[in-house]
Length: 186
Image (cartoon, rainbow, N blue to C red; front, side, top):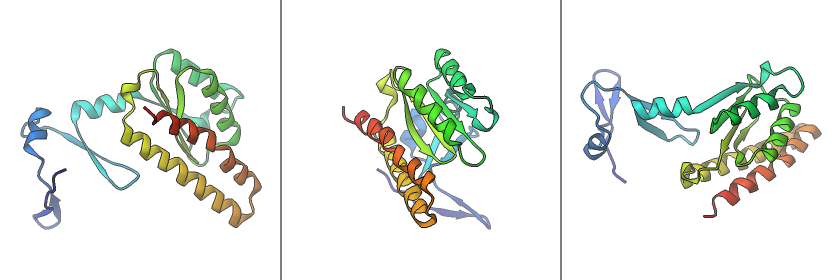
């Protein structure tokens, strides 16, 4: 791990230099675009443009709010899986409805290699684990941490609000937590 000093350039701009070895490995030239991706844990991921575009293209996003017919979300996930999409993100503008969460969990159990890697109240990330090379250990540990913190915050919120349905949702999350934990045992 290298350390770099943050320097001020101009009135309000802060800069950090890039390691020359990384620049050479990624064939970065003056004027090239790089992408900065803030992570949930506060870290910042730096990606060369071709890797950033590849990462974005690999993730297929499904809006759960638009799936108002029973079974529609399940059919979209199955179709995405059949088309070979390895990363599927189900999102909602507010909270993903319990019926949708149940649909997702039901279909994940039926499709080989598909698992829930990340689950928050308004976002569920599914990934096909048929190719274990796509699973990086630090990513799995970060996702374990996120699922654990979601379970904890929902349990606390349910306790404070005496919300039994939210408590039941928090209780139903651990199977995905344990499945992801098992994936980290190489």
